[in-house]
Amino acid sequence: MTLVVIKLGNKVYNGEEGDEEYELLRFLNAIMYPHKDNFMATVLEYIEYSDNETLWKGVTDVSTIEEIKYEGMREELTEELTKELTKELTKELTKELTKELTEELTKELTEDLTKESIRVMISDNLEEMIPGERIIAKLQKYFDLTKEKAEEYYKEFAEAVS
Image (cartoon, rainbow, N blue to C red; front, side, top):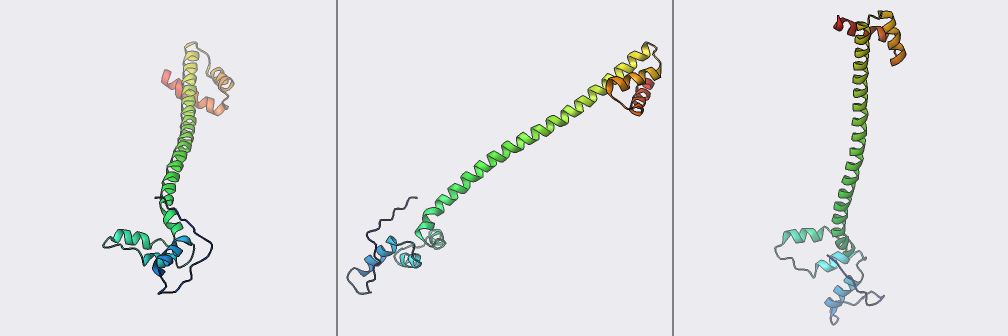
């Protein structure tokens, strides 16, 4: 809805009831100066709402022409902002979730591949009849493991091969 207010001068009409065309000039004065406190009260005297309660409620909730004008714009802006924020939040959440999932999957895959590589190395060295202490030393060297962790892997996979 677009509302246009045309100001026809800089003076407020201060006529008195009973003057010629008093009602029209009073109404026009209210329209020309919508920022005045009595704007809505004056305009409501000239509007017929019949039995349209929705219209009546909508108009009485608004107190000035500026509010009437911006009421529709407010709804449009709210809707537009909601769409834009939803779009941005979705974009950011997708980016963050993708990053987290990628990091988590990379970590899991790396752990699985490392563990499988350790299993293959232990199996291969046992087939070659290399002593356990030497296998443990290789695990420490090639997989950057502590002696305790290398021994754990050795026990786990050496038992499976036996």
